[in-house]
Image (tube, rainbow, N blue to C red; front, top):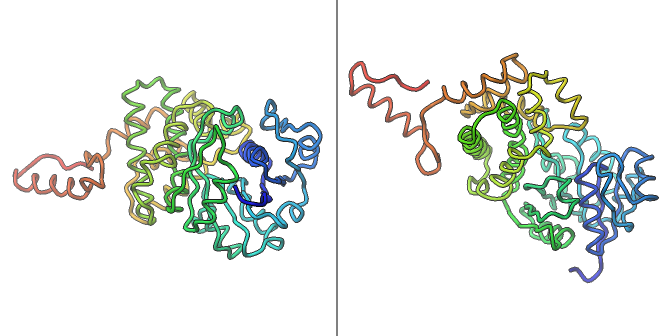
Length: 362
């Protein structure tokens, strides 16, 4: 631990931000949590409970909640930003007048900003100019973290002090924080898996077998890594907690908000009905459109994202997802071992050698 307990600020009054604030307080740090809702802030200060998002979770009484963003971030060495992607930039802009160049800024949001396809860490850089920027991502269902279930996560930053301070603030007997320097890979893993959690929920509602669900998750991992590498990420990152780890939990658990949206769609509800029933932000709904459009722009092959886009926004029935998957390329399994282009070239060569040849995959 550091010689003098640092002050930690958490922006956001949701379930994950609340759990992180309490963990940092458990570790002996002074913690202040900002939220818009004054009634919720008063409840946290009075009852040490977030009745809206984690009603059964006992928050460490050291946590002080406030609607005063200046008072929360001023003097904090570490600022954790747990704000939904649609409001992320707006809140950072509110806070930036009270931030200094030495503060560590870490996003815990698994989403992408629509304008310019910006990741949350890029928003932090653009709005503050800070060089101490990181992301926290992994298989971290907030309700299980609150229950102190054994959990691991990843802090990713090019800055070693940022990684160390986050590990010091949050590591405990049930929450293990691993380090990475692939910020974009970790952040993209957290955002992209939300897409495939929707698909997994749909598949579960439709009664698909274990073989199908295993295929879905594995091809989702291939698609995630293909897209992320095209954006400059390291493919090896997707073998870790922020890739396959986060994908497994969100594609397997009804605690995942995106999974629940997909399950509702699989039951025949409309997207509006599914989102309304959830009552919380499901980042994957917005991410599907953004990633599909970006993949088209950059020429990245993403059949699952395309299929989901058609189901969510094109009126295609959920039952069509499996058919769309099976109509894709017979291509490489692991593209970083055998490239997709090599396989497709082999098909073209075989077609030429056979005269009429075999039908080349679409």
